[in-house]
Image (cartoon, helix red, strand yellow):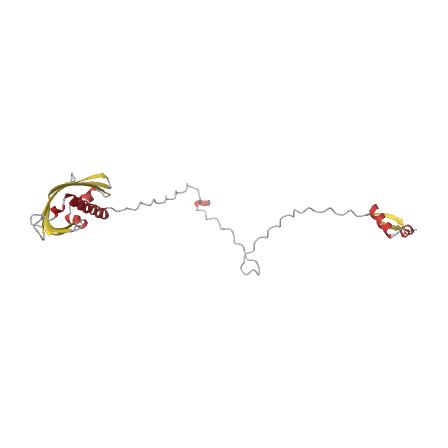
Length: 253
């Protein structure tokens, strides 16, 4: 059963970093679940194993892979791989073409087109199920690749500007000598007997807002004879003194 798989993704990493990663089979196998590189072949390729689970069936393959073309300037690579089941007569062949393109100085786009031919036990599971497993493996591979290549670089903290020099003559005393810093104000001294407490200045009392009552008017003196004053009754004398607002003074008879 033959099928074509096309995938694309972006990685937040420089183009050269992504290229070096994708052309290193050991790095790719480290991020692909079930894959492992076991050595190198005599023709310059690599030996490896791959285990794939499709539904209730798990198939293990042993095979080899090799780059047929590498064009670093164009960012293009072609890879061929083949494997045989370790417990059966089935197998799989694959030819993959990939291209990396710099989307920005710190981001790279990757496009992959794979031609896959599967025969044996996995071919009996159907195209739809194999496509679903392929999508899951590709998603796990890209996620693992991003974890390895994408690094969050902290933003640089701007440095504080240097202090500008003073103009000539400013901040200098007589004879060109630098002026000394002003002396700090004297600290308040502790009050005697206060055991170290500082004497605080006494705050003036606020002026009273209660209106003052007018002073009583003193009675004016009035001259009466002692005989006249004695002849009046006590009530008459009190009434007369209050009415006249005077203080009786006795004149000599």
